Image 1 (tube, rainbow, N blue to C red):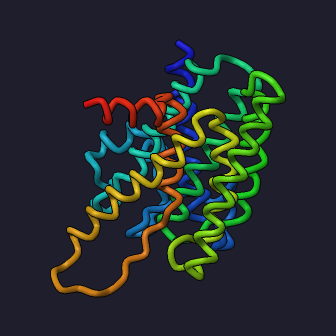
Image 2: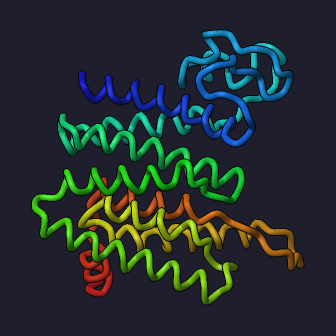
Length: 253
């Protein structure tokens, strides 16, 4: 039953993360004030606040005004719930699991805020780095393994900082540097594979965006990199896909 319990917990926390992202830097409190419809501003009923289930009960439409509800909410709730359940099955009960839960919740907030505003707020970013470092230390088999991870994380962060300064900030935001550092510390031995996967995911999405762009358009498109970093590192950690093994297998075929 624990995976189911943690799935429900993850979905509930994802719902709260959505509130934080929507209200951050707006002057609104995260802990008080009723949630309201984004279209008609009517207060939401308790049933409308139930994660995942409320979306399917209402068939994706707001009960107050009939406006279509974005898929962002149920998808993020399912995603974080799934990651919580998998984290428990991989890590087991303990302090490290609590650290992983908190790191994943902060990471989701960072990704959603970056998608919405193309910026990573320090109030979320630096707690993520600190908690990820603590969690990575708890998950490491010994101090030497953690120090090796710290070295790899520093190299990954330095490479992104170099890209930022060489491109004068056009290719990469500077805030992606501490984000990648925290992700590498959190994922340990999967850090290097996660770093490469991030660029692979970014390349695939970038090509898709270019193909979807109107023909003849020369306007630049800003794409936040935090979602790609999060996807690559988390994918590498939970699947344990080894980059060296993948490349070796491709070369043999």
